[in-house]
Amino acid sequence: MKRKRMFLCGAAIVSAALGLEIAAGKDVPPSAKKGEALAPEVGAVVGKGEPKTKIPAKDEARPEAKETVAAKRSADEEAILLTGETYVKAYCSEDAKKVASHFTTDAEFIDVHGEVYRGRDAIEAAMKELFAEESISQMEMDIESIRFISPGVAVEDGVTICNDAEGGSPVYARYTAVHVKTDGRWLTASVREHSAKNFRQQHRAQLQKLAWLQGDWVDEGNESVVIFSCEAVDHGNFLIRKFAIKVAGQEAMTGTQRIGWDPVTGKLKAWIFDSEGGYSDGFWHRDGKDWVLKSSGVTADGQTASSTTIYTLVDEHTMTWKSVDHEIDGEELPDSEVITIVRRAPVPEIADDSSASKSE
Image (cartoon, rainbow, N blue to C red; front, side, top):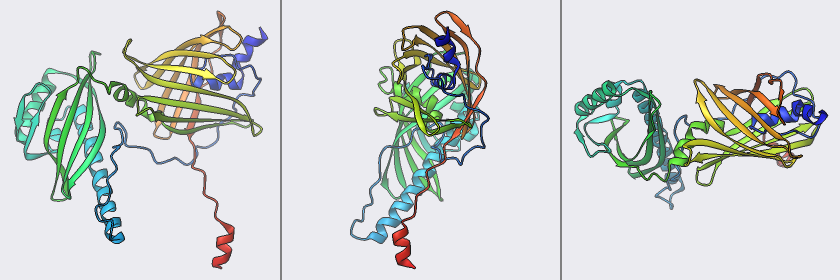
């Protein structure tokens, strides 16, 4: 019985934040009252993958020109990314006029079915018809690359994922868009969609739903500190989450969670392992503003374990989690408290005293 009760100690509760339904095996004090949120890191653009194509400077012989061109292209790339974000917002709001405002007056749009729409007015009319026929709950855009073929022309490749409000299967489409800079603003001159029935990038696109988990996070208490980190790996097809629990400055427990798209079940799945030797797996699903992970597994000493972990993104730099429906070897355990986790402050760079003294 003592072994089961140890599941409620600090390490085990924090393990549940990763979906680790495993007896901790170490009596680590639970995190106490949380401190103030630490300074946030700069986050990525919400709802889109960052372009992976790096744009080299053309003029290698002139450092001044290289710096100017690189800076200019960087600003243009950011402007195109922002345009993609406002396009998604307009689409999800079912605002046909705002959607069409992203296109040039003579733009051409060829949809996944081969239908051709020429001109901004025709695109707006097509969007109105679409929104009248279908109820859109969410659209996501994964921008894979942006290539500048001249100072005022850029080609973008990516994937869109549309979900209807009735919970049907997501609709995927690959696209190639040509953007032109007109009066200082980037507008879309051409879009061509491609069928994605055999969509090999579905894993990465689906994983974008949990992109907000990426980064470094901390849960800091009076007696223990829990550090989380999450990053995309394997060409963006998986997320790897890691945690480390420190008590009195000493590492007490570690664990990892790999998250990926399961093509068999059509769900986001998690595989979890802890440093004690326990393991579990489970599936993610969205419930309103919450993300829920239901998982089950085996403790290091062979006991069955299961629980449900509820994550809520409060803002870009804050999330909460709560673990409920705990069971160890068939015995129900109390739910955890709601725990607040904040983005970890970047480690400050330490100035070189020797160089500082030389300059004095």
